[in-house]
Image 1 (cartoon, rainbow, N blue to C red):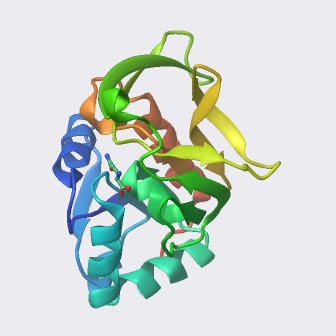
Image 2: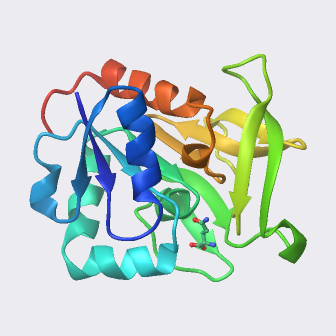
Length: 194
Ligand code: GLN
């Protein structure tokens, strides 16, 4: 099993460190050809508008869209989640339209621009560390969306089909719960080639 990590901009190296620690094979994805042999994709945090421009420039936008339509599992954190949400607002921008949710960019005020907190995760009995950096917020979730983690009652990690979206940065904490859950999702999807 090989995980692709979108490596155009943002904190992709942090995701690589987590996968390395978990002894999982990964490769950086910068062109459509890099997707060959990849079974699941991680879209990192960063600046979603910049990522979008870079994706469109090199043909990766269409290539990722195609993989999503085929059911490839994706894990998007923060800006990565913004790229995967169906509707993006504040400001609006296009997306890969993979998960039936609206996401509000830069939803938290200045004092919350960057903060550590803890939340509740259905996968664990212990509190989940949350690292927010100019975090977006999920609104208007489709009824079949599974809420994986919450912060003060609001969803901060959600799943629809094989897509996992987090508004925070699990890759910047020591807690690998969500990465392990994503890897399980990739294993279960059991599609050998995309
Ligand atoms: N605010 C950024 C955006 O809208 C996301 C920030 C992040 O990924 N930490 O793209």
